[in-house]
Length: 527
Ligand code: SRM
Ligand code: SF4
Image (cartoon, rainbow, N blue to C red; front, side, top):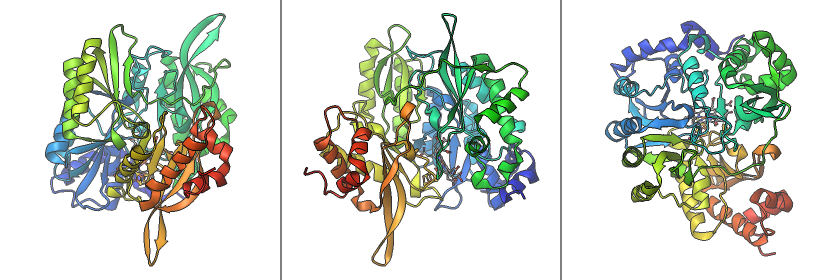
């Protein structure tokens, strides 16, 4: 029995074809569209707002987070003149605009298309924005520059009718840095940079990881023990995607339709067998791949590129929200002092690339001048927040404003040496990737008198790399108004009780859940 969403998709065949209908409907402000049409509008990156009928969120696809200054200026113009003068950088290196009015949506889409930005397949049951390393091509240590492969995969899948109707959203990363900053542990399919050692020679390529995902039932991706050379990434990804697309079981229950469940049910060995059957070249084993420890990788600050004399500047953007003026300034700095190249990161930040040594100061000063200081505190650098109740129909709580408040509160009270990942997510869908945070805050509600008020469940100890672990819920339903103070108590306790050099997660493990809960309640830091 197909789900109702499957029936809607089947009715139209190729959901990308809904565009004509959307354009006609947009002329009268989308009033003729039905709920089914709005479901399909997601294939164009268009979502209705939680509170304001007639206004939309528009998700712009930015493959590998790679933008140029002309594109950022266009986004800034739209944000400033058509919307409410801001945009959000997302955890998949995209940009979301809110307050896009129904009438203006077609013109906005045309304008974006004019500068080479698509929204096609930014949402919907398709391959979502391809996540990559934001310093691909300039990173001194990378195994190879994965940008051409990522671009090829983006071009192959975007708008491709063969892949317009997958069982569910489908997330892929392709990156070849040594830090694995694309977080291959958490996406459905991942091409992870490596080198294969063969008779004393090292061949750069990718290790294939399958079946990661977060939300209410998180899974880490598993290594398939397969080496994929760059020229075979797209054929392998195509075959993997066909297997998922054509598995009927995963269309029966929407909540079980994600790729992670298929891998968990079938196992890697069975999947490898099916993959080999689809390919006309032999798959290669990858026995020499070594997992890396969890390193903090946010690209913030000034870094030397592999190109002699050139630098990139990583700019933290608090909770990913950036104003039209800030976007214009960043675009302008990138143009004047670099070559116009800008990259977005999965940590909701941005980078300006290709700056010569003598211009670095100008870029830092220019950013500072619009409130984008590069020398941010560890909590500001490490915070992520999803959209939350401001616009999101699934939200239980506020997120971005609350995260800002937490950052300011902590900055004034706790001095941390190293960055800390605090991820604030407004419901159990975990769009801010809360299960992998050092401190994950998940929106919930709690009874206060005869009212239900906003609260957060607090989870501690998430990490990536070879000792990967999802964080554990330690205390549930802390009233929202108390959360900043409770976190302050936890972190002051950490500072006081930690052993020399002890990292936050190791400290939490040593203290145990009860000890952490006691610190969170403000009672445990005296010893
Ligand atoms: Fe998400 C749904 C925002 C990354 C798991 N997500 C939504 C929607 C579209 C709400 C809706 O369906 O009505 C949110 C948009 C509200 C709005 O108005 O802005 C939304 N998700 C986001 C973003 C913008 C959060 C952010 O502030 O960065 C991220 C956009 C990424 C992008 O550019 O494509 C975003 N969402 C994620 C991630 C993290 C990731 O991809 O690395 C996850 C967890 C990883 C995963 O998918 O396993 C995630 N979003 C979900 C889910 C739960 C899916 C599931 O399998 O259970 C939903 C709900 C759904 O799909 O039914 C959801
Ligand atoms: Fe919305 Fe929940 Fe995702 Fe936050 S985690 S954007 S509240 S669906």
